[in-house]
Image (cartoon, rainbow, N blue to C red; front, side, top):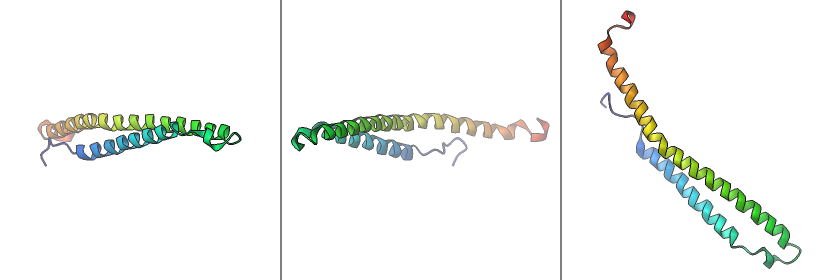
Length: 105
């Protein structure tokens, strides 16, 4: 490994982002299925409670979907930051031998 080679693994970060993106798809699918449910089929006594239950879970799934999208975006945005940090650290480390002994600084 050269001193300028980045140590962060972009395929691993990409895989993590893809996991979050799949989670987003699954949450959106579940939310669509809940939206298609008809609580009225359960009868007059149960329908209002079932409707409240479905609304609550639809809202919860929506919030989790937004959070998963944010996580995926954050992971994707992380690689350039880590890459720049690693490159900067590698360059600074590479300049140390040229700057003389530590006690002379």
